[in-house]
Length: 122
Image (cartoon, rainbow, N blue to C red; front, side, top):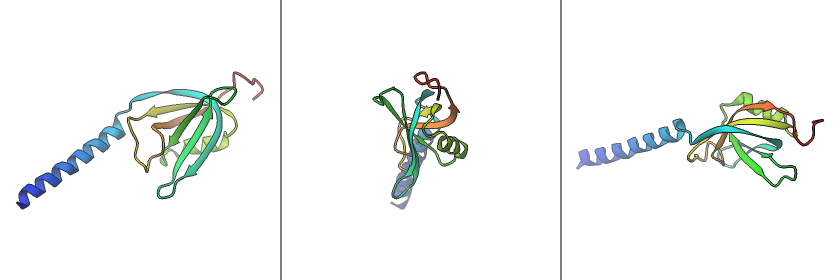
C-alpha cells in the first residue's frame, strides 16, 4: 500500500515538473512590437510582478499588455527610463503563465528606443 502511494505521488510530482519545464522552455511564438510606452509598474498582492502596456495606435485603441520577469533587470531599467517614449519590444509568448511570473503570456526580453512613425520629433 505504501509503495503504491509512493508511486502515485512520484508520478504526480514528475507530471508537475514536466508541465513546468514545458511552460518555461517551449515558447509559443517570438516577435517584436512597437509603440508608445504608456504604463510600466510593479504590481501584485502576494507576488509582485512587472507589468506594462504600449499603445500601438495613434488613438490608443490598440493596447499591447506585457510582463517582464524579475531576472530581466536591464529590461526593467530601460523600460523605466523610456516611459512615454516610442519603443520596440522583443518578446516571447508562452502557452500559459504562473501567477509569480506575470499577468500576461507575453514576456519582454529586449527593449530598443525607436522613432514614432506618427510624431517624428519624439
